[in-house]
Image 1 (cartoon, one colour):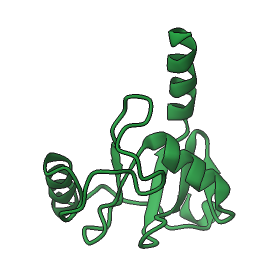
Image 2 (tube, helix red, strand yellow; image 1 turned 90 degrees about the vertical axis):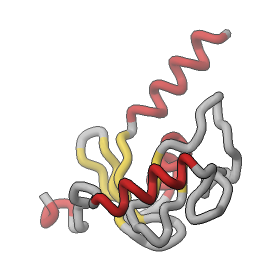
Image 3 (cartoon, one colour; image 1 turned 135 degrees about the vertical axis):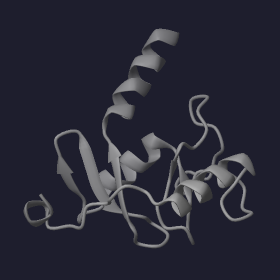
Image 4 (cartoon, helix red, strand yellow; image 1 turned 45 degrees about the vertical axis):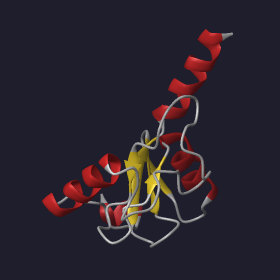
Length: 114
């Protein structure tokens, strides 16, 4: 799969990455920063807090799933496999992946509110 997509696929997050992500979420940010999305710089987007984090322990930047999908779609080096986008973190360049389904979920949520 890596050869076909011409990119390194992320493995399972290590215990250190999971701990950093959980502590970043619990402390309201990554590494002492606030928990605002690294792309749109807002904490809440459609009543949703950032839920995706960079796998790099030193970065651990939080992102909204929808912002990350749009970021990855706008980057020319992003690869797509079925409903998952593979690209790089806008801050550190670490390989990131994100399912493209959250955008569809957001559209459904917004449609139901109207």
